[in-house]
Length: 274
Image 1 (tube, rainbow, N blue to C red):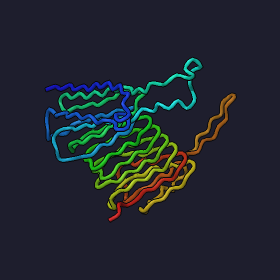
Image 2: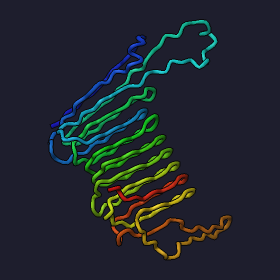
Image 3: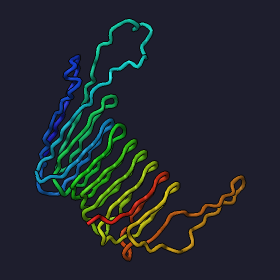
Image 4: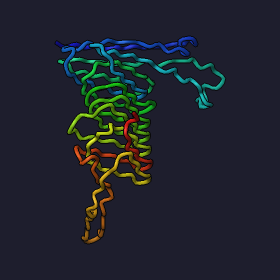
């Protein structure tokens, strides 16, 4: 069974009322095999992504464009001086495709901010990412999750499963209800804090690095005292010494590898509050 659903809305509005109240459009995407594990990839370019788990069997998508900014800021061409500017609002496109329980949701909007909100069934292999103008928020999901952002935060709460989360300019915040046994995970940002909450019975081998920040942990970490590896390069025109500056250790005797990394910001490894 194969389903293709395409939403193409072209909104050209000179109405002040419409500009002040952006309209939300909705889609429902049925799964070929409801109740079974499925994959979902959500890609945006400009705008937020919010994904919430629920007990339904279909994927529900809400699309909300942001109000167009028609302010000149004094940047008019010389020929436009003294003329009235006609307010316009660019259209947008969202496409959702489903085939054999594999779903992709894409926007192709490079000049229009479009915010996505999805309600999805549990037991998912989820990939989600945006680039500008938006936080990625995921709540109450059971499954394997991979999240990427560029210029904002990643916020995950009520997660049961595994997570790989990476952003560039923003915080990474994750709170687990339970974790998938024997599954490696990674949490990283370039500029921002990494803040992850795990169940108290977490078993993991940790690999931690913060270039310009501190590391804090609720867990007792058995730090590997083995001398750091040192690499030397000596060749005509290049002489270098490089020493490994990662922190390696074990929590509750060890388990799958958990990587925590940032350049500027602190790292917090916490126990979920009871």
